[in-house]
Length: 417
Image (cartoon, rainbow, N blue to C red):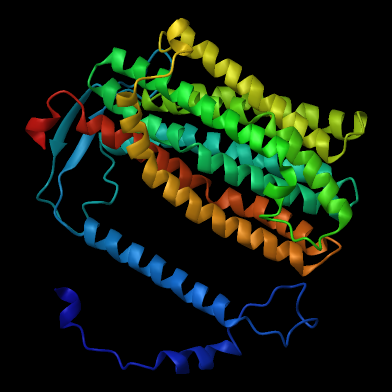
């Protein structure tokens, strides 16, 4: 309503705005300045950029409308110190509700903000480890002095990551499911969720691993054009073939990571990540230069780290009683158990497909810019730096995925909501 009372601003035709800013405000890639300054973006590129901007604007508008409504604020009371220093959900109280509706979403320094801070800190560090280690991988491969090696690393790593995030939609929904069961005090349901997710994820991961291992060139064609340098293709095939062997451990480690987060334990995953990625840092120079494996050595070091991570998570899940070593692990879960995982993962799968299609398209476009691999090598380095910027956003979204279902399923939540 307040927006309608503002004076209307003079409207300028969209085409005129584009013409006014096209010459002066258009960003130029440093390497392309003076070389291809006369090249204009295609109409399809401009349309895609315009649609993207409109989608972002619509997303922020929906968020502002949601935050602007009077809402009650749930406070999750946590003990000041636990045995494992993990954030814990003990009780839930609803306070506020009639405060300023437009400022109700801002931090207040209450117990809920304290819970978010205690969980977000380790989560940020955990999400920060992976891109930092990926940057170190890029550094070591860059020391080979071969632009084709960096181009191959960027293309093959993007293909593996895209396939992984598409097939790992089941572990992505384990966190809220485990959080809901844990908040309700149903430990048997927690065990069932974790056991079913491990079985389904292992089957899906094994299928993806076999497909990547048997047809690496077909998968790489999503990111590498046919006219790319032969050296880039050869090293990319080597990297993807080796990394494919680590698909199952990677997806099972993802389930373990989600299971601990669902129990509001964000410190244990941080320790596992530090140990496994520390192994990656040690093995990188030994395999790349010591064993003279080149790009394949970087892939093997990462696969070994993923294997260590999976074994550690399984050991801890068994030790803490979340997973039982029995014949049930080998039996496929009943069809009724698939429903929460598949239905909940459908949205995650659609989102992963959209995002990774865009990432693969950009990677393929950069590979086609320069047959020698120089532009692709620069893109690989830039992407590693860019991923550091999304750490805070990823960490906070993971905290929300835990706190919201935990609050909704806490004892007495129905009476308060």
